[in-house]
Length: 369
Image (cartoon, rainbow, N blue to C red; front, side, top):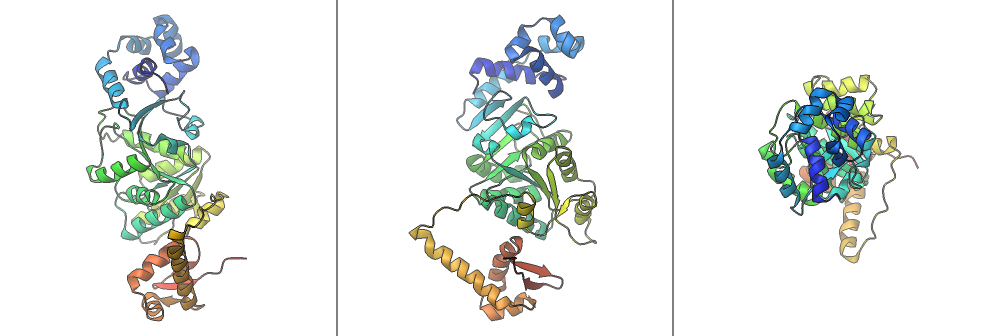
């Protein structure tokens, strides 16, 4: 990690209004580290970014913002990551527009784990929220860190699913790292900072401006090996993220829904454009040819719980039999409440052991040997 003086130069480069990411990177290519940029004269800078931007860069006063950012980074949980840092997410380096500097809050090691983006509507349905959380949990258990945008709806559900696993989750926000939007996700953001990481490219104090969220989406797309869209209308920021992921060579996955639901139309549009239709998290893992990390050894303390959980699933599958049946019938056969059964069936559905059919029926699936 850079020392305080070096960080001050990186901050100064990124805090000048009008000198955007492309100009910043062109200057770094031309002069090396930021210190050398500010030691170059107006003429040398003008040759790279033009006279107007060169004058703005050399004349901008940002000492108060710079000191505030350095003080923020002094907190043990906070970190400023530059393009030159080893902790900077390597997946972003191959993207078209990597931020020169990231404000990170939490465990920055998560930024270089294999990730999958999970995004969708802020006004999600109850089923969409369940799917986002359950898919993310299964993917996290397989070793993929979930990355999303900390918005209400699908994003928040995806983060909760990731937090339930050791792989955890990364939140990319469209405000300054010292601000939280929306306020309803304050507790969720705190948990992510404790167990994963929250990142932003925007200077401290940046409010929730509409134009910043599409820019935030390119980072989400760039971090993930792929992008799963759970629910989305035809005009949706989630579709922007999916398009950016596709343009970056990442896989795009989409969960289909009812033809009558506005929140399915964006997903169906993606499928028509070549996104992979997925019905279970296993579909994603197979498409990525992902090999889950070895499972930890079972301890004496966990053995009883694991065995009983596995036994219950096998009993439910045996009671389900070969003929589809509804939840009430299955409840009567198993002696479990419908609520308990639904809690068991959803993860089994996501890994391809059962399928939900029209009319609320469930069917057992047989995986190839």
